[in-house]
Amino acid sequence: MSVCYLDSEIKTSCYGCEACVQACSRKAITMVEDDEGFRYPRIDDSLCIHCGLCRKVCPHSNPPERFHEEKSVYGGYHKDAEVRAESTSGGGFSAIVDAWCDDNYVIFGAVADGLNVRHEYITDKKALGKFRKSKYSQSQIGTAYFDTKKFLREGRKVLFSGTPCHIAALKSFLRNKSYENLLMVEVVCEGVPSPLYVRKYDAYLQDKYKSSIRDLDYRYTDSAPLKSKDRITPGKWDFEVMHTVMNNGRVLKVDRWLNPFWSIWLSHLMSRPSCYECPFAAAERNADITLGDLWGVHLYCPDLYGRNGGSSLVVCNSAQGKAVWQIAQQYMHGRELSFETALKYQGPMRSHIASNPLRDACMADLRACDYQTINKKWAKKPTVKLLWQKYVWGNRQKVWLWNILHHLKITSIK
Image (cartoon, rainbow, N blue to C red; front, side, top):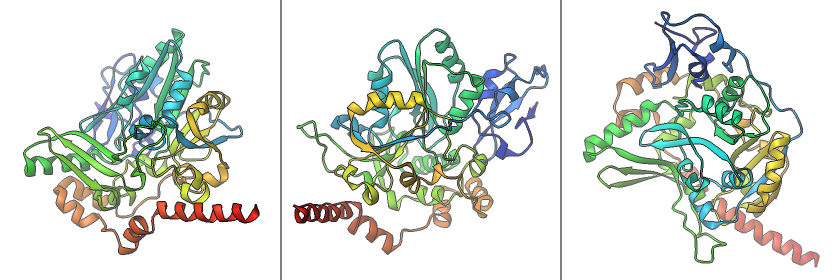
C-alpha cells in the first residue's frame, strides 16, 4: 500500500475531501490519519487498476469551474426568534432551507457526535437542528457525494452544505455537470484545526473529572427567545463560549476571549497543510451561496446588529443562488450590502490563511505534550486592551452610540 496525495507527495495538495475514495469502484482507496491527525488517501496497489478516476474527481488535479457573475450580498437575521437563538449566527441557512426545500428534498450537512464530525443527510427539515451548532473539525464525508449524485438522478431536490473544499469536491465528483435540482451552500472557512488538540482536551477532562466529552459546541451563545416571539433576549454573539457537556452530566464553559483553542488556532499554528494554500479562499466561489457571520456589522451596518443576537452574511454567487435567496428573504430581517465593503471584514473570502513559521514546532508539541503544557506554551493570554475593547467598550456600546448619533442626525434634519 502507498499513501497518495494523487498529484504529488506534498501534503498541501490534498484537501482531505474524500472525493477520490468515492470515485474508486475497486475500493482501492481508504483514508488514513497521519501523525498530525489529518486524513489522507491510501491506495492499495493490489486493488488499483490505474483507471485514473481518482484524479478526474480530485479538485486539486481538476479544479472545478467557479461562478464569475456579479454577486448579490445580503446581511441580516432570521425573523423567528427561536431559529435565531439556535443558530450560530443569524439563521440564514434556515431561511435558505425553507426557500429551497418545498417537496421531495434531501439536505446534506455536517453532524457532530462527541469529538467526531461527519456528513449526513435528512429528508425532513424539521430535523435541521442536527446540522446547527459550530463544528471546528473537518467532517468525514462518507458517501455524501455518491448519495448526492444518486438523489439528483432520481429527480429529488438536493441542498448540499459544507466547507469550500467540500463544494469543490462535489462539483468535481459531478464532473462540473449542472443540475437544476442542486443547491450548493458553503460556509466561510478559516482552515480546519488538527483533531489532536480536542483529543488532548478530552484526555485532560477524563483525567480530571473521570468522564469524556459527550457534546462540544465551540460557539455557544445562551440565547433564548422571549414570549413575544419577535425578539430574543440580549444575546451573547460577541461573547460566545466553548460549551462542553460531559458524559457524567458536568457542563463546562470557557469564554471566547479566554479560550486557549481560539488563541492557538487563530494564530494558524495547527491547521491542515492545504489550508495554507487553499485556492478556494477567494472572492470567486464554487458554491451557489456563501454563508458567514456578518463581521463588521457594528461598523458598517449597525442597524443589522439586532441586540447582539447574531447576524448572517449571505453572498449569492450564481443565478440559482440569487433566485433561492429572493424567496428566502421573506424569512429574514435585513437588507442588501456592498460586496466590496463586506469583503473587508471577511479575510477567508480574500485569501487563504497565512503560514506561521512556528507551526512545525507547535505540531511537534501537540503530538508529544499534554493539554495544559500545550496551552501554557502556545496560547496567548488576552491583553487588558483586548478585554477592555470586548467587555467594556464593546460592539454593543458602539451600536448604542451609533443609534444615538443617528437619531440626533434625523432629528436635526427634521
